Image (cartoon, rainbow, N blue to C red; front, top):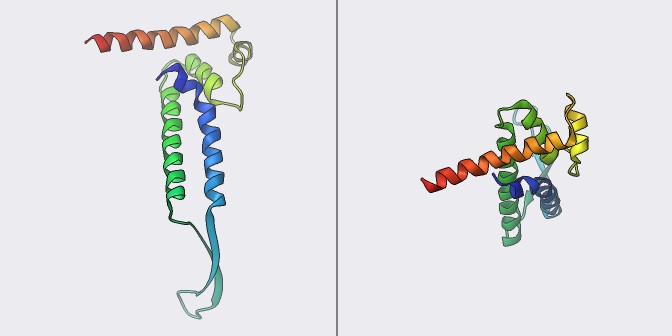
Length: 140
């Protein structure tokens, strides 16, 4: 996981919402008549909806699926951080809310006398360890 992928999370979530709105705009709806499957077979109307099968709708569905995979990848990564404090810092920094919070705000929310610099350094050290591990494995 790279810092760039983490920073893209909020944008990916927003793009998923936009893509789902486009899918909804291209959904075709209609009503049909039907009846109950059992006696007394009462006739009633039902609404049906579906996405028209064309290149544009296929592209929208493929884009949404790709974005959802990206979103889940970041969420699994953050959930997989073993240290609770570090996991909370990453969740606040990259996943929760509409805008990325400041280090000061994160330090206040995690409490425990943590300073803005302390939370930032914990974050940077964690990412630095990952880069070091990755380089070791790349050499092998």
